[in-house]
Image (tube, rainbow over the protein chains, first blue to last red):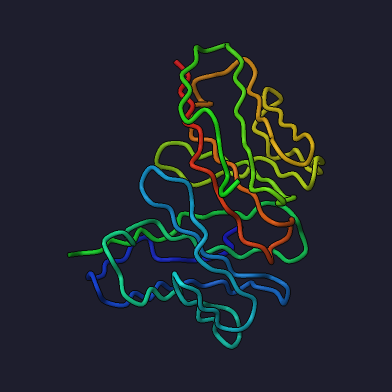
Amino acid sequence: DAKTTQPNSMESNEEEPVHLPCNHSTISGTDYIHWYRQLPSQGPEYVIHGLTSNVNNRMASLAIAEDRKSSTLILHRATLRDAAVYYCIKGSGGGADGLTFGKGTHLIIQP
Amino acid sequence: GAGVSQSPSNKVTEKGKDVELRCDPISGHTALYWYRQSLGQGLEFLIYFQGNSAPDKSGLPSDRFSAERTGGSVSTLTIQRTQQEDSAVYLCASSLQTGVSYGYTFGSGTRLTVV
C-alpha cells in the first residue's frame, strides 16, 4: 500500500532553504501528514505534523496543498546537521495503529 | 523522564537464546509503539500499546516474539529462541495517546546482533 511518494534523494547547499516534496493522493479527510527524520545511527526524530492548515515550528514548516494531495516540508536554512533521511507519512485517521514508514528522502547537504 | 529510554543499547546474543528489550516511555504517554529496522532498511511496525493493552499483535514477525506493558509505563519486547534474521535495531516510540493527531518520540534503539 504505497501511501506516500517521495524522491529517493535530494541535494542542497548549506544555509539555503530546502523544500522536500511529498505526494499523498489517496489522503482522506481525517488523515494527518507526519514528517520525521532519521540521522545516521539514530532513532527517528519528530519534525512536524498537520491536518489541513500550514504548520510552523522551530524545526521546519509544513505547507499542505489546498486539495491535501501533496505537501512540502520546508527547512528554512539548512545546516550540515540536517543531512538525514526524511520520512513523509500519511497517518490514517480511522485507526490507532503505528505510523507506516516508507523509504523516505535522503537529504544531502553540501558545505 | 525527559525522553524515551531503551535498554540495553547493544545486545549480542547466541542463536537460540532468549532476549528481553526494555522501553521506558515519556511519563504520561499512554501510547507505546515497537518497530524494528534491519540494516539499510526502513522501519517495520511490530506492535502498539494503548495503556497496558495491545489490541493487534499481527505485526509481530513470528510467535517467538511477544511484548507486554505493565503499569501503563515500561514495556518489554521478548524474543525467544533468537535467529540470525532477528538481528536489527529495535526502536520504541511513545505518544500522548494513540491516533495520528499526536507526534511520536522515539528512543535511540537497541541494536540486537544474533551470532
